[in-house]
Length: 364
Image 1 (tube, one colour):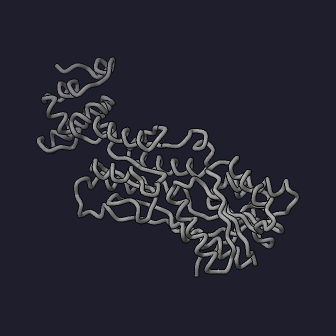
Image 2 (cartoon, one colour):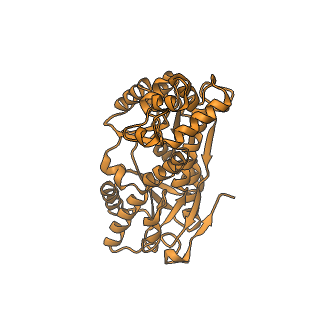
Image 3 (cartoon, one colour):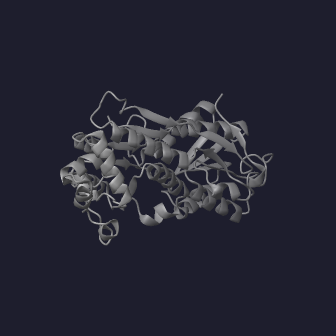
């Protein structure tokens, strides 16, 4: 007579427990719960029913040994924790990523390291130990050594960033050149003839692409441009803004790479006795409730960070599912189109309160 269900539940339920209850071998249970051939449909259904009845949960280590998915996606970050903790965009991106992964019963494993080299080593170790099914690589750099390293590993990986610098790896990215064009065209239409850009980390590819687009569109429209590197963070943005305002030919508009930077810069502008936007217009490339609730609300580039995370997670899960199938479109890129959200920090006629909404603009 098989053991009673309560007796089985005194400790962790194992495959051997399910096998005894079902009257089959542990190997048959392993085949059934991992979705592998080798057992009949009726036996598989009976085994899965018993596993559910006993509240059995698979061991990640056992799944790895059996070659089954471990239902974990990895992400390694080579950035200081205090910088990451203050970025509203990154938090929203992770939220979107986690939403999709959780719906598919995947976990997100994150680790902070001190260098890209340590990041690559973590990828190698994770895949060697079968701790993840795939990885999301963020903060794409110019000539990024992580791309060929991940290509060499040959494991499922997704690059967040591009275009043109993700090698043969699949990628999702925002069109940063278009985002900058929207901003500069908007400011030029308002009569600004000298515009500054307070840029984030110079080694990031999206920063370099924004810099190049900023100068190119400015030259095209006859707008004088000034580039000021600040690194991501409020302190650097505040210093850069103060330096710009102290120059004899101070810009009449400043574009910041993040909402946190824009708020710090706006504070410096107001502390200097200047008005926004009458004396200095302010724009952020990243939108968040911080930008919308500022007085005046800050004109921003809209590109939902949550949706960005959702897209990244969905695409990586497709790559994991199609592992080894190079005919599945694994190496294409997917783009999120930005839009300009015009608010009172650039246009005095725009609503002064975030509750009044925002005007939207796009390239015609």
